[in-house]
Amino acid sequence: MVLYQPTNKSVRSLFDLTGKVSAITGGTRGIGFAAAQGLAEAGSDLALIFCSSSQKSVDEAVEKLAQETGVKVRAYQADVRDKAQITRVIEKIAEDFGRLDIVVPNSGVAIYGAGEDFSEATYRDTLGVNLDGAFFTAQAAANVFKRLVAAKTIRQGSIVFTASVSSGIVNFPQKQAPYNASKAGLVQLAKCLAVEWVDFARVNCVSPGYIETELLEAHPQEWRDKWFAMIPSGRMAQTYELKGTYVYLASDASSYTTGAEIIAGGAFTLT
Image (cartoon, rainbow, N blue to C red):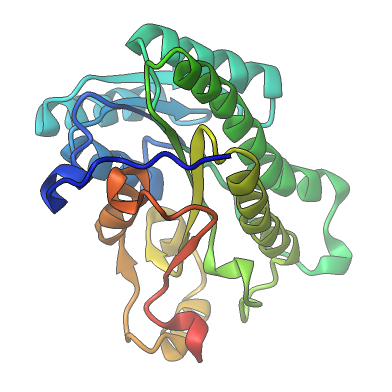
């Protein structure tokens, strides 16, 4: 097994994604949209995969990214919990664009509740999206990468999971044990796949802390006050502050980085 080694280039060139194709699940809003922005600004064409977003919001996301960056952007609908469905969509993206270089399994759900009260359906939905869906997406990508590397269409694929600081800590005051377990499992999954797939892909994780999104704004103020008191950096992050992390892990700038978890948490996990 040999990890692909790019030639020595300037730093600007190492980050350049011109001519590459990226697919992002949950890519029309929140962290996924920010990741898509960063990849597009670095030159990559985009396939945005959505499940429940309205057609209007999807069209707006596609138009905004295409107009602001000038890259090719298309949207595809798939439920990541359905292995056959997400596999078909990943294969379709590779067919439509003629290649696939980067996949960001980003779709996720956070459902809160006491562990003893979690229903089976809620538990399965949390794990189904956050862990099963991420694996099915990565698995489909790996099979495409393996084929394209063998055909010398690409040199190497890159998978960048969206995990969470919850992979290594217990959040408080909210109760979310299944969510935390799904993210911890996702980080370990990435480490295992990084070793298994080293011949044709690098596999890494971005683990964000508290990020200002529409979903976060819906939480009780007492939760937000508690979080602010525990974040050493004194603020939450904006989604755009994650763009560079995704680009780094997707690009040749991180050519010897695989199986890693980059925590973007404002030092939240250090106290």
